[in-house]
Image 1 (cartoon, rainbow, N blue to C red):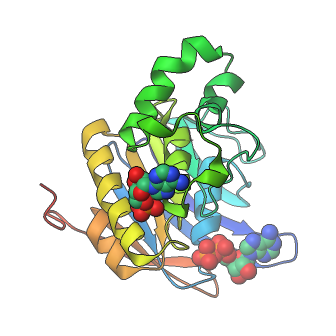
Image 2: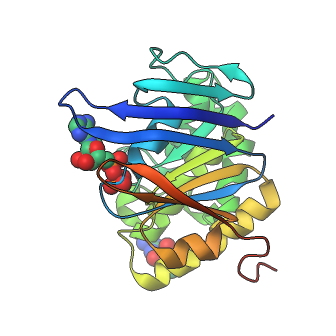
Length: 230
Ligand code: ADP
Ligand code: ADP
């Protein structure tokens, strides 16, 4: 069974906007899926529906075979990490404590979490920055902290909403490469929202192409052997 299944999912916001119409999609183990499309085509909405950050208006969503109630807002039963375009780090907390947060919320003490937090920082190349504050970091490094925080619980699914769009080109290329390397090693599934054709082709094995008014899927492109990934 797929990790997540969407069946004919639609989302209409309270103001009447039909943000997403009739979306069906299976997210498999170790998929790297891009949602590609112009602004306003419902990419973020689809991602937030999967994360449980917003409720679907009609259709069904399944997590590892188990139906998630459309009316349930919480994401407690969803094994995922989320990376926003803004790294949303706590400015008063050191890098270590920012990455610890999801474990802390799950009841893990700082000491008990330390090895896992260190591992996560190592994964994104920031071992030496555990004790600094976010303001001391570049935009790319803040994004790396945000990725470490999303992955520190070893979720089966990583959701990323235009994570690198605000970064300069070189930083973005480095992060694309490092994200691929991390994904290859740790084998979680990814859904990556972007309006960059380059990013979608470079990163993903499935490109879900979307169009606006109303937001909907118009095509899916499967890439067997994407960019040279070795
Ligand atoms: P994308 O991520 O592809 O740019 P979004 O999912 O953010 O698109 O938005 C899809 C459509 O839904 C857009 O027309 C947007 O203006 C609208 N929309 C997004 N969020 C809300 C909201 N909270 N209330 C009303 N309309 C919204
Ligand atoms: P990245 O592409 O990894 O986000 P940058 O291009 O911003 O990183 O910076 C390149 C390197 O410069 C970083 O990996 C880090 O080693 C170093 N660096 C950047 N900002 C700082 C800082 N505030 N203190 C120490 N080293 C830094």
